[in-house]
Length: 74
Image (tube, rainbow, N blue to C red; front, side):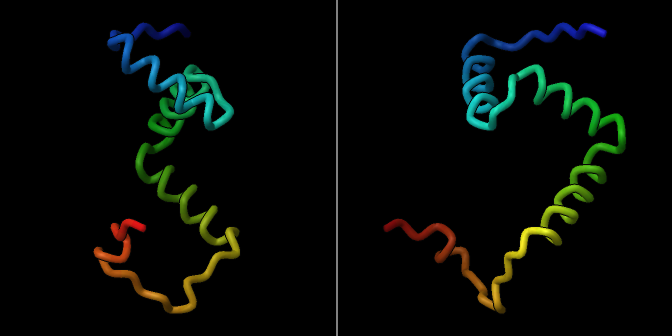
């Protein structure tokens, strides 16, 4: 099915650049988003995040960050 959207050119241009940085086309990203939305939207994204987090191998080892730490500029 073909879907037509009205979006200003600057927004589309920036979105295409971001999609390219992810190695995808803007159409691919939009298709993925619509499919996830149809599957349950936010719940599906949250489940994918949990799945990826479990397999990431990362661990904070109890480290806690403050808001100031997160926004500290070097």
